[in-house]
Image (cartoon, rainbow, N blue to C red; front, top):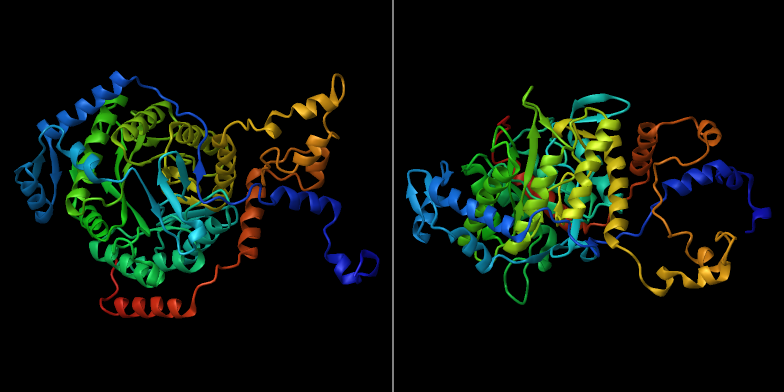
Length: 523
């Protein structure tokens, strides 16, 4: 049916000229790729001599001061058998021991498999993977303000991550659903990642049994694809965040989850979570050396448990207000820690996790924007492989913002273009265009522009670059209002990826049986 023959109802559904422009701005600005392959050099802040000094200092910390492994006799026995000096819960390591264990067997890069193979990610090397923010007990949006997170919010953020071309990963505890019992909510969170997305996901780490539940559910989800026929070992289908209890302490909860995942050949991100000045020295060099020591000890333990288990060296370092004690974000010192740790990870030969879109602001305002940009740009220039907290972070991580989520995803989309580098192909050089146009004319109508204009520049779905008259005609909305409309539109248009009904039934049966095994608990 041509335009003149179409029905009045059909014609009424067509967007007006103004609506069509808005739809074009909110269309996806680039095709989905499972991860970024960087084509720009790394930004370095230290010489080789400086990096060697910090490695030496980390080994000194491990040898002279040591690390506490609390309430975990098994880990202490593992270290004693490996030749470490174990006195009570304090473990001291012969110089170079942890580094040798990691370099001997930890992979330089690995694939985390997704249930949709087209969305599997390679972690390490010159690749960057963006994942959402993690762990917030509160959510915030323009309509309701700040409130406690619920499981429906968790599902919403999984869906928003799924539809975003800029995010490669479904993440983990995107927000903490406080409407569910603590000892059971991990089932619903892991299931949400499996049901509402087919991107890779993270596992539960709040108890070793919950880590094992994640493994068991993943085995059901992947079925025959869970085991690698070439090796007989499980494929790496889960990656999980293991935080040190800084300073210089690993606790039984995190160690138990780490060992559970390592034994099942699943990846762990071994990350000291440090507020510099309180949990590490106030200096960049001191924080870097401590971070390296803590992460080396955790990664080395994973290799003792299962040589070859995938590990990612992590760093989360925030500066601290010496006046109030509050964490600060987007400041220069954490960026210097990030650059330094990224270089040390490359020297060690393991993937690196850090960065994101961090801010202390309570709402998605100018402070949130510049603090997040001041974290995300060093993240990309420094060479972070796995970027947690890419989208949604507010209030120092206490709140997950709906508007902030889509705003951050927009910025992450821009980083795809930045890290792709400069196109030096014949088309990129554009000499034909320069020859065609010549002096004193414009390029708008030339052949090269006509062939490239749709993909020539990153097109933000949120930024308004129109005249003030057009902006006013469209409601004079600020960025937050536009972001509010965008996340609602994305959820309204969301379509779940297909999931085999038999697999879905098996997952629900497993969860029902496991939930029935213990009562509700708030701990």
